[in-house]
Image (cartoon, rainbow, N blue to C red; front, side):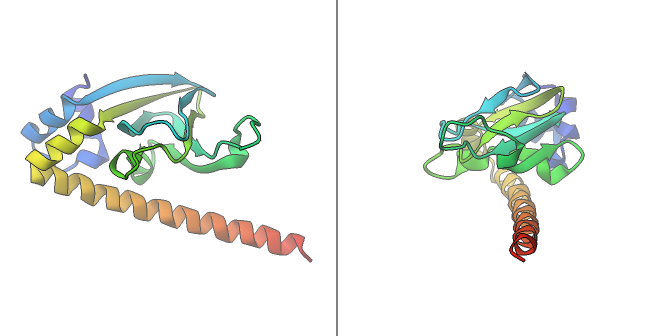
Length: 165
């Protein structure tokens, strides 16, 4: 279980009262990973929402020809210094509830909080204020990711346009 202090420090839970934070705290657990270690693989069941609290994590496509995943297949990175990039694994809310990408620890070590998706969905249905606040935050996260993707596409197109000359 995660401490109340740890949960209330997370940007995602700013504005939650102590009772709400305690409910969230009860469904969280902390895990640590070492550099290069995979947190989850594309296609696995999405059973948790993840929050990076220390270090860095990259989300990557797995290469279909069985080559090792590398930062060349990186889609987004998640660090503690950018609040909207701390949360990932929100595939747990979207059918068919499968991870769309793989996640790897990119720092010497990383620490994450995993929130059980089944219990979180029950909690959000039982306490609609919690559900509204979490979904509102996730909308910001999705918007941030969309902006990241747009920037990467522009950068990619610019590189390809220069190479075609």
